[in-house]
Image (cartoon, rainbow, N blue to C red; front, side):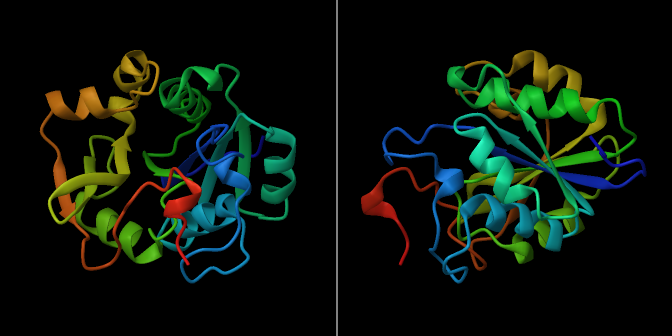
Length: 201
């Protein structure tokens, strides 16, 4: 897998869930926001890339072959399959961080596939304020409510991966460590879309 080889931030898009409440994996959904017709996994990967991540690693699980087909045409993106994706977000995050550990990328910019209105401008602002150093730690907030993307410098990866269990990603780690909160409520809602009733127009 041609993962990054330079000291640059890498986007890490978590797109492994089955989307049970949605009725299908959200990575395969299309439309919403201003990206009409674009699969959410492509939209999410593009937001990270256009926001300042030269490479993006997509973590897939449910229907990973179909997700892989959508990611394959993106020359700056790679895909890894989380074998324990059914357990929740935690193992997916750990899988992504472990895949990046063998590279010399400085930090991971973690995004979720089900936040369709989070675009490149949010990623740009968060990276500009948090930075991309190995010790970087921060996240976007929307009217004071913490959300994604989350910037994890590589110095934090091992501990975050160790604590990532079930549906808990980096939440516990961030709660226990000072980090930079970047207000982005003027750029997006940052809302997770979990059901068909909540799909954006």
